[in-house]
Image (cartoon, rainbow, N blue to C red):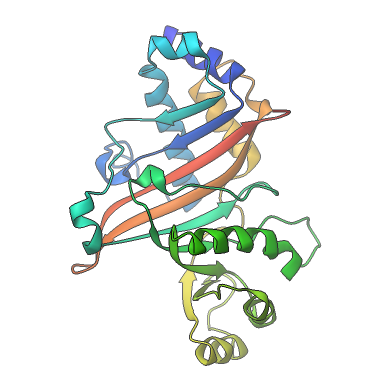
Length: 267
């Protein structure tokens, strides 16, 4: 094992939380040689390459400090928005819960005080259990807090049918302004969902994300391959934010990337 891997292994053995940020993928040459066929493949590749780069650039002082929270970033890939250009950009994200009970994230790492829109994916539930309002409520309340504190302008949902969307709309203080529908499960928008969305001015969008974008096993494999001999099974991914920054006037993507948080079991 190289010195870099030993340092990364030592830090991860002591840390409680791992905060990984890919930075702007458009700045990386790492994905251009290989075009990922799925979102899951792209994400795993990003995690692995970010870990590789980070472990090769570890500051020796960090090893002496052994921080509880490890910031796994690659400085040359991180691109914060120029405040003078903020009004020209639309900053949006999709918040994906990977582990139940995890519902907090920060937008400050993007260099902005406020996100224009955030869509939350349906929280993970046990097999055979139907998604209910009770499953959504704690996560939606957290998003409402971020809206009320002006950290997010608008919030939306993903993969809710008409009944689920109606229940959330009637209960919520901050109403959903959009709902994503998976193209794989629906070639045509359900008429009842379309009618309800039109009545309450909810935008219906489409997506093609898999049901499970990042499994616990896939994250642990990426960790193991990047830093050999680590106790990868101790680490659990909590949440993921996939974000994009679009130039409003031109409709082009200026920046996109992933932010992920994981924790060590028992910490």
